[in-house]
Image (cartoon, rainbow, N blue to C red; front, side, top):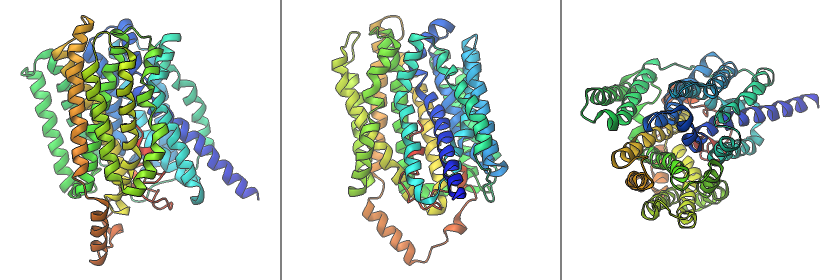
Length: 510
């Protein structure tokens, strides 16, 4: 009897530790958005500096996500989880103490490094601690906590900024991190991934390539699109990403095998995910500043007014999951993306320097419903697009591409904003905001089209039956050794079907 009680205690502690850690990492994606005007006022800096306060985190998080989890598989998941948590906590304190905008950006980048190591290991550690029969419930709680972080990010950031000061959006992580560090060391069991390999070459190519592209997009409106600096950054970034693709085709155990993109379903849902986050992150980045700088709302008021958008998945996502089980994920995801695009276009039509919140509210609700219809069914599409042995790396790749989409969205839409408008007046802000929103709406509409080109559930079933009939049951031989590098490589082994609660949480980490 003592052994089951100890096991239950271990599982409960693992759920608490991993859920709080996941909350911290997910929260820092959007918590800074409603604090941007206050940060700009206190630390100075131009639009491109504000972009980097968001993108420095999402970019390092994205490119190191799979590499960080592979480090855990290689050197010990608990050990690396603790190390990532320590880096994240220390960087949060550094961000809170930043004396200038450059120091804040550097701290945000280090935060992203810590989150990239910590975040993917939360599911792996939770899987190891929870009995198979209770993993669905545990993953559901984990996902709900992460979803709450995404939904509440702008509100928490706005409330702390208004009632205390903006550094407290980062100080919030410090006591949580300090409390989790000894608990993780004492209450989590150590584990390793079999045959884990570190793709250092792929990590360097992806990191350098994405940094070059994002840097070029952010510097373009300032230095000029034909300047030597911008052209060099864009060309070098594109070349490095080309090298990453080549490495994914010909390298040994690459972090992202390009053969996965032979699947029309895998390619379609990942392109859609990248475009969805491009439109969503870019819009939230600008709209939070519009609400405060143009409409005069306080940070808390701005965060509250965005809840119908960011918080809607907490209400509608369970319905979306049930609906996708009935009719398939493709039509639900496509409808969600269409609604998200409609919401952004609606805002582009109604926003003026003095638009009432009542005129904006329907667009936020439509966008929120669209976001909710996207999240849960998209998990099923990602997982069902690859073999069981590849589900871990597929989940990690999808999460990474979403974060990349967020970084690109901030860079692209802010570039459009600065080219067409600025901060000089309310009308000038609208002149830049409206075309940026239309570009975001177009990106999300393209995402809906990409999903429609993926195979239907009937086509996927026929393809699976044909593959089984051909005797291609070599999933284990087809594995790359990096499945657990996504941080979710044990879900299928844990008896959790693809696309169920075990995978939904990883896709909420926006």
